[in-house]
Image (cartoon, rainbow, N blue to C red; front, side, top):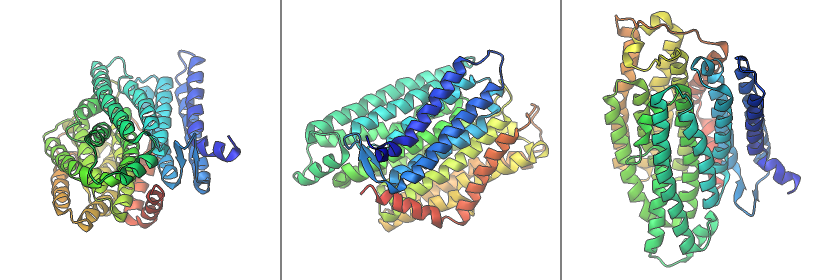
Length: 483
C-alpha cells in the first residue's frame, strides 16, 4: 500500500485508533475518577476532527483500494465529514451529561467511535459483502449502546428487541447478497450493474428476489414501514444521548449505502424497484405522522417523526433525478443537525433516573429555562418544515424533485403529512409557552460544553436554511461521483 492509499483510508483509521485509545484509557482509569469521562470525550473529538481533516485532503485523491472494494470519491468524503460531524456534536452534547445519566463513559465513547468507523466504511465501500460487514460493525456498537444503562430494565429490553430484529434483517440482507452473487458471479457493485445491464431485458426471479431482500435490509436500518417496529421501543428505552446518535448516524450511513447500491448497481432495474419503494415511502410517511400524533412521550413522538422522515428520504431516492439525488444528501444533513439538537435539549433536561420525556414535563419550561425553550422551539419547527429553518428547505428540495419526475401523489402525500406533523411538534411548544402549569421536577444546570454543542446545531439549522446553495452544490458534486 503506497502513501496515497494510506492517506485515503486514514479517516477510518483515525476514528478506530481513537476508539482503541479510549478503550485502553478506560482499562487504566481509577474507579472513582469521574473527570476521566471528559478525557474520553476529548480523545473522541481529536480522532473525529483528524478524520474530517484527512477526509477533506483526500478529496483530490480519487482511488479504489482493497482490490476495488473501497472507493475514495467525493461521495465518500461527503459522508465521512457528515458522520464525523455527527460524532463531534454528539460528544459535545455528551460531556457531562453522560456521567449525570449514569452511563459508563469509557464504554459509551468507545462503542460510539467504533460504530462511526463502521458507518464510514458503509458509505465508502463498493462491495455488497463489505457493506454487510460494515453494517454489522455499526449495528453491534449501537445494539450495546441501546442497553448500556444496565440499571434500566426498559433500556435492556429495548436493546434485546433491537438486536433480535436486527439479526433477522441482517439475515435477509445476506440472502439478498447471496442471490445477487448467484446471478452475477460477483458482489462488486459496478460489475453487478454492468452484468444486469448487459443481460436480457427480463430480469430473473432470483435477481428480483435479491433486490427485494436488499430493500428489506436497508428499510430496516432507515426505519421504514413495515420494518420500523424496533424504532419506538429502541428510541424510548435507550438513553437520550444514544437515541440522538442512532437516530441520525444509523440513518445517514444506511441511506449512503442505499443510494450507492440502488442508484448504481441496481439502476438497470429501476422500473422494478420504483413501485416497491414508492409504496414503502407512502406508507412510511403516513404511519409515522398519524401514529406520532397520538404519542404523549416526546421520545416516542420523535421516534415516529424519524419514521416519517425516512419516508421523505425514500421519496428522494425514488425521484432520483439530478436534483433528487442531491436533495437526499442535503436532507440528511438538515435532518441530522436538527434532530441532534432536539435530542441534545432533551438530554440536557434529563436528571439522573428521571427522564424528561412526557409532554407535560415541558409545562411552563420557558419560565425556568428560556434559552433551552427557545432552542427546542427552533429545532421542532425545523423538523416540522417551517421557514427559514433548514428543515423547510430540505423538504422543498425533496418534494420539488418528486414533482419534476411526475410523482405527484408522493409529493402531495409528503406535503399533507408534513402539515399534520406540525401538530405534534407545536404541542410541545404550546406546553412550554402557553401552559399555566409548571412541571414539578428539578431541571439540572446545562454545562458550557453542552451549550456550545446546542449553539453549533442552532447555527447550522439557521445558516443552511437561509443560505442552502453552497451545501446543495457540494451535495450535487458528491453524488455525481458515484455514477
